[in-house]
Image (tube, rainbow, N blue to C red; front, side, top):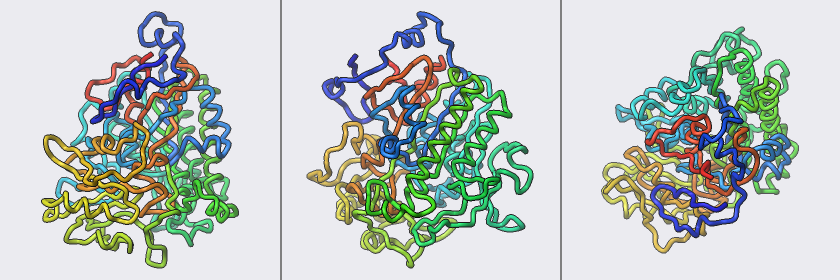
Amino acid sequence: MAREEPALPGRAHTMAEYMRPRIFFLSALFCTLLCGMATAIAAPQRLVIVVLDQMRPDYIDTYNLPHLKALRQAGMEFRNGHVGHFPSITVVSHPTIATGLFPRHFGWSDDILQDATGSWHEASVLSLNDYRTILARSLPRPTALRLLKNHLGGLVFSVGEKGYAAMTMGGLDADTVITMRKIKEGPWAGWCQPEGLNVPAYIARPEGGRFYVDCRPDYGTADTLYALDGNHYVPGDDPDHLGGDVWATDVALTLLTREPKWRVLLLTLGAIDKIGHIFGEMDNQKIQRTTRHRPYQLAKVLQIADAQVGRLIEHLKSAGLWEDTIFFLTADHGGISAAKHFYNDPPPKGRVTGVFGRFTEKDAFTPPTAAAPWLQRETVAHAVLGTANRIWLTDAARGNAGTHCKNFAQMPGAIDAYVKHATPSWHYERCTFPRRSTRLPYFLDPVSLLGTVASPTAPDLVVQLAEETGYGLPGDHGGFQEKSMRIPMLLHVAAVGAGTTECPMRLVDIMPTAMRLLGLQPPAWLDGNAACLTP
């Protein structure tokens, strides 16, 4: 069955673009679910969303991941699953999933943000209370997660070893948020302990118990640009204190076992992202040969993550909850190797970072050599460099933003540049002509994607970079490249059944889709929609 698919905001599409052959939701169960013609299948009562940080859909087959293959076979695969917003980064994608809103609504729009006093911060250093304060000031309420929680009448958990991922996905309305924090002093200095919101004593205690992990070893990554911090992201060698994705899944399974009133689990697993950043080995056989004998490399962490998905599904099945649960598996973004054109400076010049400017915590304005001619203090107030470069101009430079945009389009690796405008409403326009970039899939149009972030807090300029190009880390994300934007999107729910579809499912669509499947009408103010459920 062919149908018209939803256009992305800010872009019109012809019917011909969407009338493509597909295997879609053929079962009459959709009429049962959406039209109320029968009640043979009970509405689900629980929602599980698993986010594999920096996961790509092609990894499932390339690395032969059995549990993800089984989930793909048993459920619905959205072959055009994609991030759907800009930038494609963790601290933006996780709240997009939970709120059904684009990043222009959050109060932050990137890895850096300006608070209500005008001070600038790196988003990754904020506390849960900080995030909640910003969201409370910025989001329309009640939030989608609050509506979902009220409808289901149970507890919402957000869990993950990466703090800002679990915190921003839990947002305002998670009952419990659990992540880990490194201990700086005392007998457990160098270890990581559970922290968050309403962390149960059976997780937090005893001191030095199961959920304390050693965050000191680097497992042979000290010579890299982004060394491992012990067992924060990898399991490690201590069977009594396994870390990384195993730790996060153990926390989640403990909660599901001990808290029968749970209704929503938001689980984010961060190891793929950490290893992907360190080595940048994806799609690069030369780098893969150098990582083959390291304790951890992309293949190993993918297998670990896959096993955790299998454990979670097996628990739901053994508890008799699998057919009662909506199970989404996705990623917050993909990842690309910047090995072909990497414009950051290697050690010993210091730990590589993609964030520049004056922050409350520090002055970080030592850009890489390749970017230095453009990142001048009199022009640039702040910048985030990655697989797309985001530039906040000084007040003096902002009045001539169009000219600066054309100048930044000359950065090494740049193929296009965009400048933000305030009228008639916040939006971006390309400042280069003719366009030099290669053709992107229709759902990855840069101007449309930039519209999702356009706001007073968004960068003044955005520089689009070529494939396999970056200024941040050897493996990176953040930009418009297809491998950064295309993500796995797998759905299992009894009322839908198995199959595949070309419908362009975005992260912002997950929450309204879940609400519709649960029999709850998504509010009109959500940016996402449940259009992929339409027969």
